[in-house]
Image 1 (spheres, helix red, strand yellow):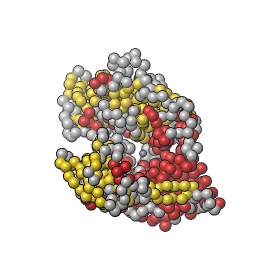
Image 2: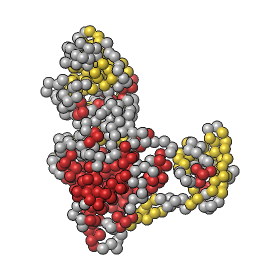
Image 3: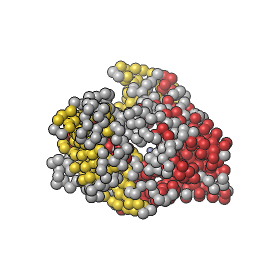
Image 4: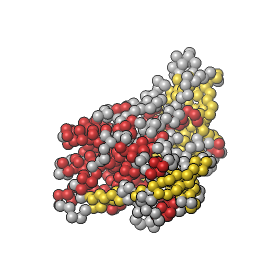
Length: 588
Ligand SMILES: [Zn+2]
């Protein structure tokens, strides 16, 4: 392949967290070639301005330096009249331990293309080539390379030449380099790899035994063949961390090493269930959002926010399927699945924001609200992940019940895949509701519209009952409360959120206040709940707090904790027709 845009990338100063990148272009735009770095990374809907990490940049034609101007913060421009081959050389500071950016030290390097590869305007659809070079000073450290970028001369897991069919493809294959451990398996004939970086004692055999059936079940749900020829899980194990980002043939994951399976582990721990759920989630995105996309993302505009009201389907349905695929493949028990589903329901019901913002609005405002949460978020917003998952559940149960189990959300996902994923045609803003109407009748389309645009309570009890699951609401504790969420700050206890309409808000307490005393007794991070447990709802207490450095006093009336914790159980007395629907739902 004769590539129009050629890059090299090298960890030139790992200890200083610096990659050096060169970009070579044979035929720059004679009107003044423009280069830019994305302002955001697809999958994480927030303006991050990756250009801020470009430390220095020079350009030359042959040996002649060129003057580079900056039309805006994301953009670099060469002078007009430059016609021959040009080379840009720049350094990128990489010290953000997250799946969205880049990270480099003596132990490993990780980057997303959005953080390191400038886009040569006008050449977006041309072939791109990258030489990934060994780290300077660590040539004998035994580093390897894990990425789903297609090789163009490099050996698998080796340094060398890789390629991508376009800029969009180039930035959708993150790269890990270091001394990771590696496991490989096939799912429906497609080679898969798991590369784990960081100190860990993961039982790779167990992990593969659990991942393989989940991947196969998802490939079969959408239909063989799988859309990728290879898939890589890039896992970074740390002491405490959690995150994942989806890509077309890989995912970058951050997890706590304690959540990985260890030798001799029998039933999955809660942490491991969560990690498997994360893997399942990102893998499902291989179809849902990486190929089936909202029309607003076709193509992405990486210079600014891309608005869609559909993230409840792309993130929410993916969240619905992540744990569902674990129970369908027997990785977790049905009781575990109902516990996880109960948690999702409880999370949605914890905040009054669900009565103010719809999931469609939550999707649209992801850039400023979901991704930039503050102390008032529980009172102001609803998550398109958790509530979107419940919309997926309700739509699934509705389709199953009305068709006596002949149609389900699986059919809707397959229709999306065939019409949008396989064709590249984006989903219109009303596309999900229109498709629901097509599969289940016009009334179902209207019902879905009302749910995604509305802020009413979801009819969960009624629909779960129809598949033999009983939902009961419980209070989190018998102790009365003041309507706050607290966080420990050393030995001190700080108010993190004050819930709308609660006693604390009525009395004037605020997020950020440090609790000092309750009825004259010192409050610590360990004793507040115990002090409250000795009191009754309706009693008044005196609370002292520090707001900044000022001591303040409040009279607060205690209130019974609201019954907002959802408990789900399998009904054992349901009729056979209901049991059959439940079997179809949980067994797939
Ligand atoms: Zn997701």
